Length: 318
Image (cartoon, rainbow, N blue to C red; front, side, top):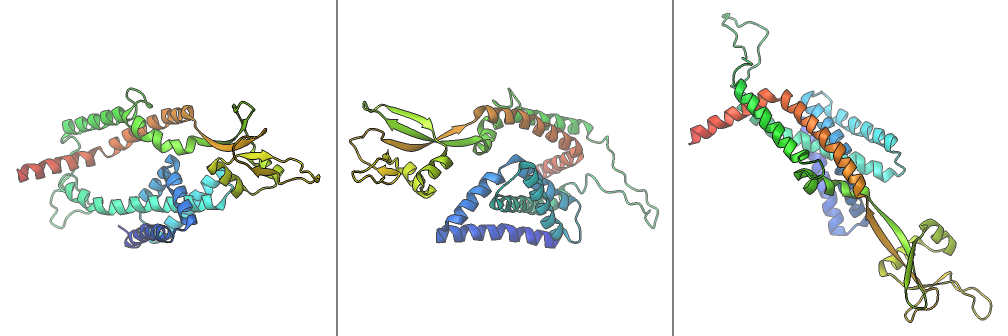
C-alpha cells in the first residue's frame, strides 16, 4: 500500500469531519447546505461508481505520485460530469469533487485493512510462480487450478444466486434491495417542487394553480426571501389596490381573517416521480448483477481461498 496515498486519504476524511463539526458547532448555514449537497451527490450511483473506480484503480496500480493522480483524477471526473450533465453552479462542482475524493479515500482506507488479511488467508492457497529457478534447482510449486473445483463452483453459484435474489427477484423494483434501499437512494434525484397560488372566493372555497416564481417576483417587485417567508407561514395576501388618494399600495399586502375578495396564499407542493424511479431501478439492478457476475468469476480463486482458510481456522478453534 502506498503510504502517502493512505495518509492523504485519512486527511480527506478527517478534514471533512472537522468541517462538519465546526459547521455544526458554529451553526454555519453554508456548511449545512454543503453537507446536504454532499449527502445527495455522494449517493448518486454514477459518482459512487466513478469514485470507487478511481480509488480501486490507484490501489491495484500504485504510482510514485499516487496522491497527485488521485487529485487530478477527481478533478478530471468532476469536469467530465460537469460537461455531460451541464452543471451551471460552481458549488455543485465543488461538492461533486469532494464526494469523489471521499469515496476514493474510503476505498483506499478499506483496502488497507482487508489487504493484509486476504493476503494472509490466501498465502497457502495460491503462491506466485517465480520466473527465476531456485539456486538448488528445486521443483517449482505450481498452482493447481483444478484443486477444489467443486467448492469453487458451489461458491460461484451461491454468490450469483444471492445477488440475483437481492437485485432482480421477483423483479428489480420488488426485490429486497430495490424495495428497501435503492428507491430511497434515488428518491432525492426524482423529487421536484412547485409553488401554488391558492385563492379564496366568497364562499371560502380554495382554488390553486401553479405560479411561475420568477415572473411572480418580478411582477410584484419583491425579494425571494420574503416569498419564502410567506410560503413557510402561509401568510394571507391581497393583490395591489388603489387607495383613496389615487396612489398604489405595495404590490402585495398581508391580511388576516375575515378573508377579503382576492385573498390568496402561497404554498409549496412536492412531487416524486415514482415512474422515473422504477425505470432507473429496472436499468440499474440488472447492470449491478452483471458486474457482480463478472467480478465473482474474476475473483473465484480468491473467494475459494478465503473460504477454505476460514474453515480451517474455525475447525482449529473448535
